[in-house]
Length: 195
Ligand code: OGA
Ligand code: MN
Image (cartoon, rainbow, N blue to C red; front, side, top):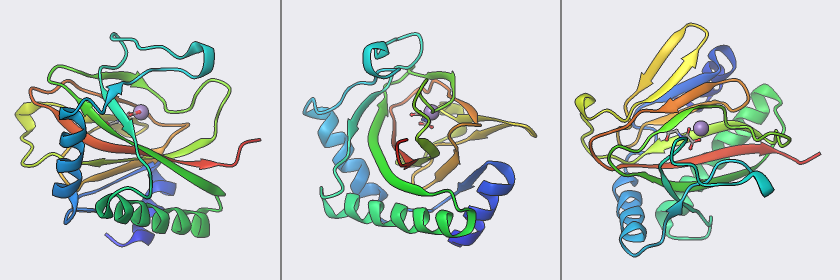
């Protein structure tokens, strides 16, 4: 799907799902993520910000590692793809997206992320959420869908390697359903400048 169609879908529906958006290097990204996981390089994700920040098993069960754009070639190339998307969104939708931040995420079997939106209380800089999935040969019976609560009904997205899900961070309620196998992804946000 060309970038302009992604941007149009995002503005018309508040979300867009693209299979094989970033497929060629997804095996490399998966290997890098698993390597970090096996060497203790991921930490339990928290919810909230500042003094309100805490790990809450009942809300989310994933492990994360923030990414440096300068890391390995596959990560660099993913940041470049996101930069192209950022510029296209700004050109078409005048959103003033300024920055991008992203982390690896790993959900162990059974882990989930309850229904939520991505803005923090008091910090609405996150405007567009983008999730790239890294799971080889994901089967529907394994669970782990990203469920988007759109005005037109619920959409379940299978976390298949190479698939990109993007949506408006302020508006879109969403949740991660538990899976029977490890679920790997890169989750990132385009942000506007702080006020
Ligand atoms: C998140 C999130 C969705 C997914 O990390 O905020 O909603 O499909 N992730 O992993
Ligand atoms: Mn989210």
